[in-house]
Structure formats: C-alpha cells, structure tokens
Image (cartoon, rainbow, N blue to C red; front, side):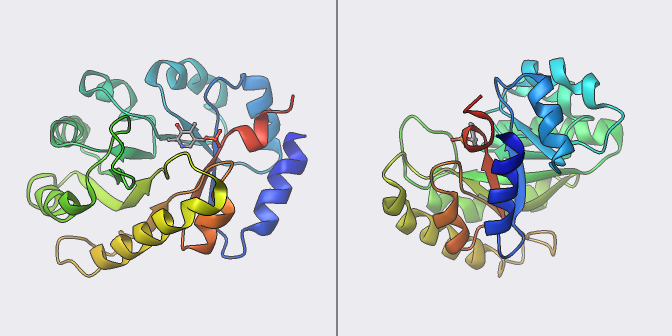
Amino acid sequence: MIETQIRHITEQCQNHQTLVAVTKTVPVKQMERARSAGITIFGENRVQELLSKYDYFIDTEIQWHLIGNLQTNKVKYIIDKVTMIQSLNRQNLAIEIQKQAQKLGISMDCLVEVNIGNEANKHGLAYEDVEDFLAYLANNCPNIRVCGLMAMAPYVKKEQTRPYFAKMYRLFYHCQQFSTVTDAFQVLSMGMSHDWQVAVEEGSTMIRIGSAIFSEE
Ligand SMILES: *Cc1c(COP(=O)(O)O)cnc(C)c1O
C-alpha cells in the first residue's frame, strides 16, 4: 500500500534524506494518496506529463522536480512550475535555463547530472568533466543556483551499486571544495527503488522513488 511503503521508506532514512516520489505514469488519484501520506515533492521525467498533472495540485504544498532529460525548447514551459531541475546535463540546456530564468527574474535551483557508470544509453556529464562544467555555470549562469549533483547507478544487482554511489559521494565532497560552488551545494540525489538503501549508506541526501511506492496497485 502506498501509505505503508512511504512510512517504511521514511523510517529507514536515518539521516532524514529528502524523499522525492517519482510519479511518472502514476494517476493523480494515487498521487493524492501519497500527498496525504506526507509526500511534498513529486518527480516527473516528462514535461508533458508534469504539465498535465500540475493544476490538480496547484492549491497544495506540493513541489515539482524535473528529473528526466530536458529538451531545451521545453524549458520555458516548466521554468515557473518546478522548484528544481535535477537533470542539468549539458551546456546548451544551461544556456536556455539561464535565459528563461533571467527573463522571469528568478533563480533556478538545479542539480548537475553525472553519468557515473559512463553508460552510452544514459545522459549526464562524464565524471572528469564535472569540474569544468561547474566553473562554466559559475561564470556564465547567474540565474542558476547549483544545489548539488544527481546520478543513477547502472542497473546492476543492488549490492553492486555500492562502488558507484561511493564514487559519486567522493566527487560530491570534492566539488564542495571548489571555489566555483556556493553554500547551496548540499544535495546529492541518488538512490531509486531497488538501490536506495545502498545509496543512503553511501551518503545520499535525496532519494527518488517510484515503483517501490506506487507499483503494487
Ligand atoms: C523513474 C526514475 C526514478 C524512479 O525509479 P524507480 O525504480 O521506479 O524508483 C528515479 N530517477 C529517475 C531519473 C527516473 O527516471
């Protein structure tokens, strides 16, 4: 049950990791149950789907995170609706977010997405390109507030994800020492339904859970 799953996950988050309920393909009726059970952040990976559900929760405390690869031409549709873009993964996307955020006079919270397993089918920066990208953002995107890093482990057995998360934590910690990041750089978003316990053990501060909350109904 949605309520039981949410309680189960929150109870295991000893360091009070932020729980993002990933609601792609989940109908609003079930999302409403998750909200009643204490969820305050929904994560969607498609702009169209986020927009189709947005109005339903407009009078609530719900915040939206964009977690999937974002086409530059769609930034303008979500820039005033999401509280965080977790999938900032390339320069032309940064340019567009900067442009749209500047237009509205806002600062957009973003996470830099890292392709920690160097997988061809996944988006995100290569590990060794992160430092330069953070410098680029610091120097060129005053309306982007870089709040940390996001990553997905390769789809391997649960325990085999550990070295990837550990590597990600070391990168995160390393980045915090750079002069190009600010005090806002506090979020390490990693861990999904099948591997979040490992991610939490390795230093995740934000987990993104879909099927483990919503799937059995
Ligand atoms: C779908 C998705 C999740 C959640 O996946 P589950 O395995 O259903 O928990 C997390 N992060 C991203 C980027 C996703 O696309």
